Length: 108
Image 1 (cartoon, one colour):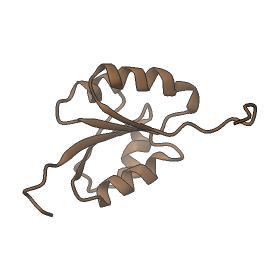
Image 2 (tube, one colour):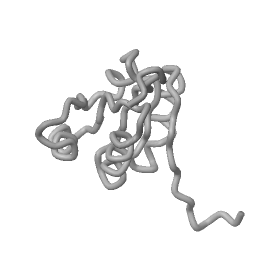
Image 3 (spheres, one colour):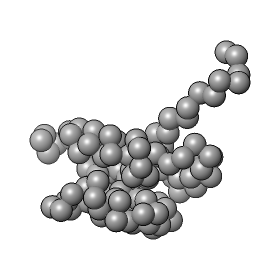
């Protein structure tokens, strides 16, 4: 890895269906250091990371957002929680990636 380029510390919030994909991509991307995997089910998060991971696991979004090593978060929580988690991350000064599923009731 080119050490002259800055490294961005990120956290993935959510270890369910889509979270493992975000973890894998973060770990494979030069310039990104995965700092945390955050999930209410810490055993699930540990399982996603594997036995030899140095990535920290937390069940506390507040802990993750308070860490200055985390400058960005990728949110993979259920869609109904996106608004509150995104708002908290933005208020904490973090960059945010969140994908909202498109509902079938709007026509655009």
